[in-house]
Length: 234
Image (cartoon, rainbow, N blue to C red; front, side, top):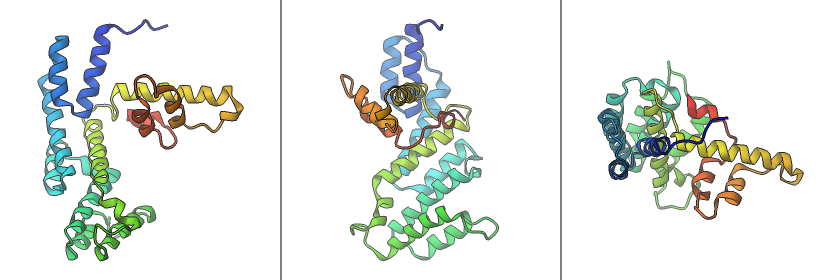
């Protein structure tokens, strides 16, 4: 059986979490308090990723793409990340009420050999283009793509991709630990109680983590669907 983690190991776990999520001010204070030197290359990489996220969150996609491809020239060779990034760029173009440019951009960056993306992705693109005939303030179904939360989700996905392509985990070790605990606990709940066999991990998190440390929001946000821990370790 593995011994309990040392104080130093726990401190490194926290620092890894701060580095992953880009908490630059917090990590500076924390590392001084625990007398741990964080490698300059890790700080520089975190700051660069933070800048990419900032640019995405303010809608400056051209600058964000330039910055992310400088950090990782091959990042847009991944089809999923390319779609996420290009989709967000299209959203920003439509937000500006451009009409011709989004179509040209779609053809240039989201059509491979003249072939359209799969039906699921095309459905998203069509919904985004539909917003050209509405005001962004209109209460319509597709307005969700123009919420700030969409930018933030894109920034989060790009941050994870940049980490993964630089040999890091897509999730911090602390996030993985929380997911593993919640996943294991939910599995035990399902097996021990027939009435709870369909319990979700979000429900388990709410029941066991809401007090006294208020972890429910953190954990439930990570578990809205089926869990595949291997996805975080690629």
